[in-house]
Amino acid sequence: MEHLAVIFGNPVAQSKSPEMQMQFAKNADIKLRYLKVLTTLPQFEESLREWIEKGIVGANITVPFKEVVMPYCDRLTVEAEEAKAVNTIRIEADGSITGHNTDGIGLLRDITEIKGIDLTGKRVLILGAGGAVRGILAPLLAHQPASVVITNRTFSKAQLLAKEFCHLGEIEAVEREDLAESFDLIINGTSASLQNEFPPLPAGTITEGSIGYDLVYGDQPTIFMNYLLSEGGRAAYDGLGMLIEQGVYAFEFWFEKKPAIDGVMTIFGRNA
Ligand code: ATR
Image 1 (cartoon, rainbow, N blue to C red):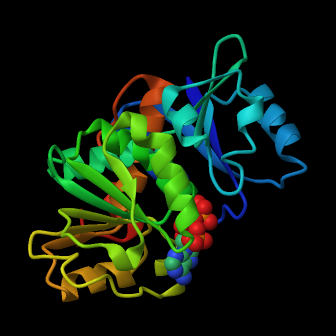
Image 2: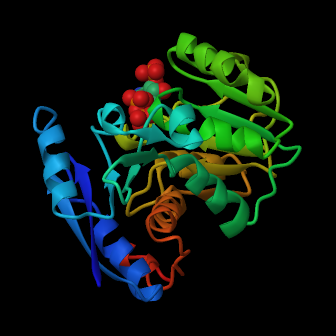
């Protein structure tokens, strides 16, 4: 039997999720047709109902619908509750909708399992305090880093996030100019890279052991990655691994089978 899944987004034309998910399906010996659905905020609900009627097993949800979809979910996973956003839904046998979020767990699986970085006892710096950062904090703290420092242009947003997640581990907000220690892992969760802008960090923040991870990715290394390496950091990664692993988790959520990722890198123009 052929399964059907979709991604809702606006814009959605650029999405590589169809090719990626269909490659996962091929690797897992599952028949899957996966389509892009371009919709609008006023038409989202109707579009969602229409595709559920067509029998989708589930869907990926991208910008700007990750919060919009939440009221239509009959239940949320812990990950979706903590992120306050849904990037994956599953349609249950009775037609009800379960909302999940695989972004944060996808990032953590990329960092720890694919890149082989053990976070236990490490010092982590997070730049940014928007939706992307909110989604990664709980899974990050679950790996028991020694400390997580969060900084943001609008400092009050960093403070609010630190307060909200402090029951899960060591997390504090620090103004960028007050950063006074080095970090093992620096995660860039600002959209500054996309604007090709990266203001310097205080001296001593990056040392030879520092690893950088940008949540975004592109054809070229991001400005943050270049900055980290030019300051003597050890390695810098972009967010492609996170994108792939969030997709792997979504696939597992629908089909209860973890797909191999063989053949996926080339979809993104990278060597396997
Ligand atoms: P996303 O969903 O990608 O997280 P967002 O919620 O709009 O998007 O958050 C964007 C983040 O990038 C915010 O932390 C934002 O800082 P502010 O909270 O001060 O707006 C940060 N950001 C965007 N452009 C930036 C820039 N040029 N310099 C520094 N931070 C920037």
